[in-house]
Image (cartoon, rainbow, N blue to C red):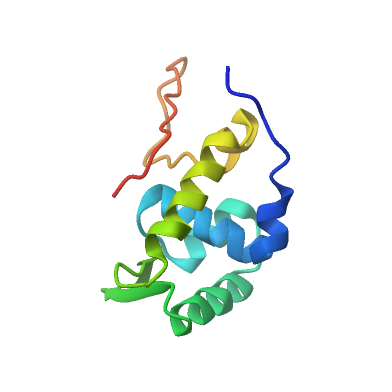
Length: 124
């Protein structure tokens, strides 16, 4: 079993909202503000504002899909590999309870009694 570490430094480094946004996007490839805000029970406007700031800084890139603006890590960001490595390593050491609560996407309700599979990696 992998040893668990105190990962509060990631929240200190980026701030809690930005950390959660970046971890979520690094895990699933792309997302939109409402999905992230609902997942973490955060204010949607705050998430949207932070995502816009991350895009202004060049870390995220967005595109419109219908009326929804999807964000992803900018493939041309100069520190993309370093940021992705940090985020992936952080995801590896998150407690299982946090992974189960925040970092598993459900497309539809599970069948009663069906085992929930964990996915530990980037869904790009």
